[in-house]
Image 1 (cartoon, rainbow, N blue to C red):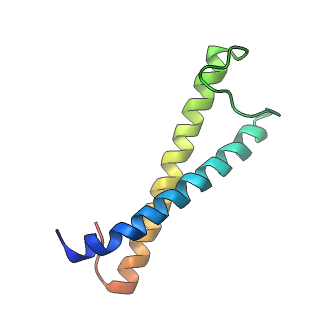
Image 2 (image 1 turned 90 degrees about the vertical axis):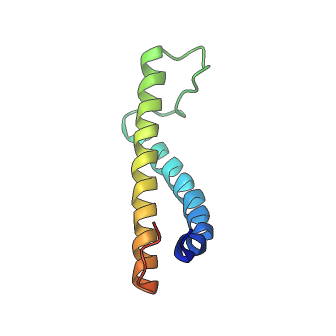
Length: 88
């Protein structure tokens, strides 16, 4: 394994945790902006429809994937700028 990959592991872990928290915050804001006053439904929420549960889950997954990709790419780019080596 390349030394750059090993050195990037702790950075990647921190970025992963950060991106998860950021994605959660973004999702809450998007969910509220779509006209929902309450929290997004859980899959086992009896009072919510299948449609609402599946839309919330799909939206949350899409936001999480986009934020994670953006944060990971930004971290890799920053490491490349600092070290001259791409960490991937």
